[in-house]
View (spheres, rainbow, N blue to C red):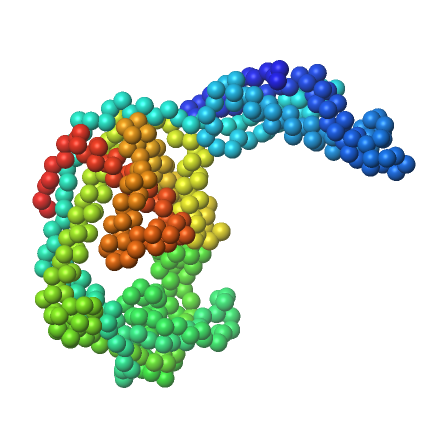
Length: 417
């Protein structure tokens, strides 16, 4: 196409181009489109395809013009990409379309191009690797968490205390001075931050079956800004109190947790698990520090659309409600951009150094998973394929190979904590 392309903005990965399609090209496309319509449309009194072209143009003028516009914009876009040699990062946007009769077609094309990631320096970085010590105290804390999971709740007499579970009816007027509504039922673990402090204090003054009412001040840091610092009349009816009973810390408890013959076997397994987590966390921090240093030494632009796509993925993964998505996007924008940079860096190295996972790498990983599960590799592969997890495994292998390549070329110092 004989189009004119004028660059109005070229900033990083963003391009704003003004495109002009000559009048002669527009008229030629109108002729072609009108002929196509004339060959297929039906008009009263004429056989299909035999209606006069002038009548077809008049009858289907708007539809023909719309089709011409869509065709020319699409063809012009292809011409722009080819002529400007653009590697587009996302779907472009068309703005300010001018398509008046007897005039050239003009529009603005706003698009993003994929950045060139050079990575001139990937060696000579220094990283400190710190593995958090697993102490007897941390093992004991984990054991206590397991005991808490196995705890039982039993009805208790008298006034409730911290850590008790209470069933209450809570009521407060919808407006200051309004009528007190019927109470709503709630189950609350006292001291767990499930109710504001003033309400918990009121609950702990009651015995089962009692009701009390008084003014309670909402905290200044309450999540709902409209209620911060407000004083409200609150009525509480305590219906039931339950107290937690932890199991004895013995071999029987160990057997109830899993396949452990004794409490010492459970402690050993918990310690091994905590040490494995500490090692993984230390390795993850090393990888992130290395990525941060490399991206700082090799700055490159990131397409905003890729960041928005990553934010959308977070929104879906965390199931963020519609009314909270804008605030969430603002809060996680920097996190999303950091993740995009990480992915771009890994992809660049994987391609440049031929480190991308191969089919054989994926087959070997599936074989290993099958051995751990003591099942057939074919079944594991089919299951992963059905769940759509094969690309995830392929990506994981690629990242492992890239980081192995990087760690061989950079200085990692172990530091005890």
